[in-house]
Length: 397
Image (cartoon, rainbow, N blue to C red; front, side, top):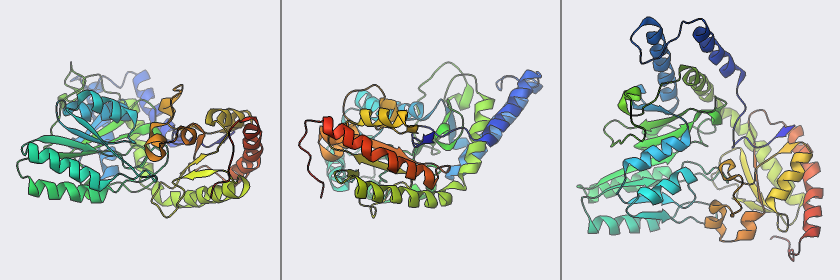
């Protein structure tokens, strides 16, 4: 099996499995209790959670007190947006649905930041709208939420420039409360991510994208930033999230986080494979359109999104699966949704481009022979599907 869907999830790392099994063995032996309990086995659970929190915080340059464990990136995102219920919310048009949907529910109003054909936000349009909002309500509290890297295309957003813009606006409107959130779920482990350098107030990410366990994520909340719990009914996580803490998952997450500190440099080799794949697809399938095809544009090192005119993405995916190659047609969270990708629609405004797109996402286990097998298998599949299509194909420029 050739696995090229790492952006959906990364396989569990063996080191993570071993660390989790050690903690599970403690529970089997009756030596690990509920971390909220005051007795000795409860204390052991608290110690494991504290150590895990420290490792996860270190990965992004935060302090452990600023890290909140959640069930994953989606819950973390929802928690941030929930905190700003009734406030103006500014979110990019290509955000993950776990940002877009709660923003539309909680925002008053919610304004979508447009993007160009490379998937990069229009900072000028955002500044115009922010200034218009603040001139009308100079004491407003608001949130800007822009992801670090897009999960479907890999495009990296200009967060440094955005942070500088918000700093300028804070100086121009000193009574306003401007806060900045980024969903870094796809970026962490692929590129260096540091909350201090980014200047963000909130950052979210998920364990399983790093080779950690599914079911746990993290929310960074800068000290002093507003916070409103999404889940009530307990004093866990510093009274910020109710529910029995999971020392097993937290230990697995921490182990993956320690490994992830070293992986961004290793992904440079994967970028070479990704670029090789892009180049060969263009040579072998003349009609292919590389989404974010300008490699000078900043993108994650492991994602390539390609649209094949006349070849519906899900059909391509199914044929590749039969050949032992696993890919995606976009976000795994949109599986079963027949609507075109909102990300590609925001970039191109063309439903055909969106419906015919396939995402190839590589990880550190991807080998050149995997890419060569894909390149051998893919062209006849696309040719077969295009022959069945009624669309008049034209070679892309």
